[in-house]
Image (tube, rainbow, N blue to C red):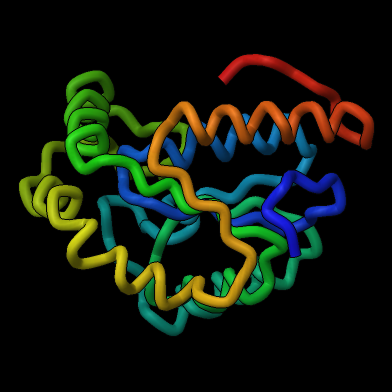
Length: 186
């Protein structure tokens, strides 16, 4: 299967480090393709930043995957291989660590105390040193897990925002001839 944008794609997974632009790319891709978008942060977290019971989360995740069409944004490596197996393409945003960290810190400053649109209700933005450490160590600790989970599937990997946006524009061009309309703005 090709990683060139294809209007027949019905299931798209977007993964990468926090602050890497997954949510922004996912929203733009949803506009261009007309596919429903699911942010795993919205699906996973309970109010007050509480983690769900593992069985409850696995059942909710499985229900998402049963839907016929989707863009699912979020890494959640523990069940990434399940998503990758069903996806027409996996988009892997592998941006530099400094860029991700800068964006996360900027997001905390700009949205502190507010619930972002891609976050679960009752989970306001906060400063969390362990989360900053997670972002800083993501390449060393999480990328090997991601690579193992998506190995053998149709993957397009970007190491820069510019490359991801160039690819997104080709999605817009291909979709303009399909059911979705070509819309600008990211």
